[in-house]
Length: 184
View 1 (cartoon, rainbow, N blue to C red):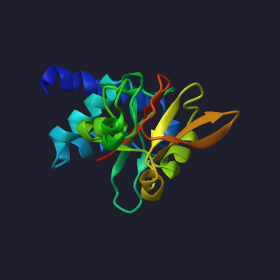
View 2: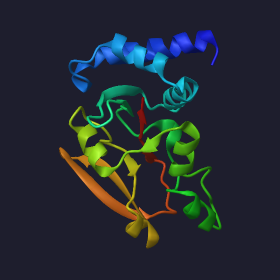
View 3: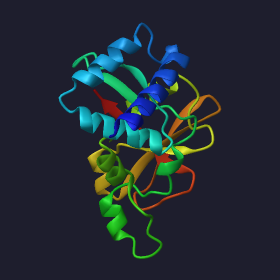
C-alpha cells in the first residue's frame, strides 16, 4: 500500500473511531494505531482493512478479545456491505451451482480479504452497538453439522430483535452479504 492510500485509510478509520465511541469505550486511537504499526503482519492487516473499507464495510474497532488482547475490527456499515452481496455461502456451494452462479462465495471472499465471517455470538454482540441489517441480511459462520446437510445460517435485525435463519448454502440474494472480523 502506498503512503497516500495508507494515510487516507488511517484517516477514515480514525474519523469513524472518533465518531462512534460507544463501540469501543475506554479505548484510545493512539493505542489502535500503535497496535497496527507494531503488528508482525502489518501488510496483511492493512490489506484487510483496506478491503473492508473498499467493499463498503466501514470497519471500526468494536472491542478487545479478553483472552488474547487483540483489538477487534468489525464491519459497522448500517446495512450488509454493498460490495459483498449476492454471494453464496462457500466454495462447495458455488461449485454445486450449475446455472446462474454468483461471482464468489462469502467464505471465499472473506479469505481473500484476510477476515473471518462473524459467528452468531459476534453478530449479536455487534447489534448491541447499534442498528445493523435493518433492511439486509448477513451470512454468518455456520456450524459444520448444518453445513454438512447443505445449509448455511444468516442473520438480520427486525422489530428490535436479531433473527437467525437458514437457507441452502448455494442460495444468494441481492440484499444478503457478509460482515467480517479482523483481529489485530
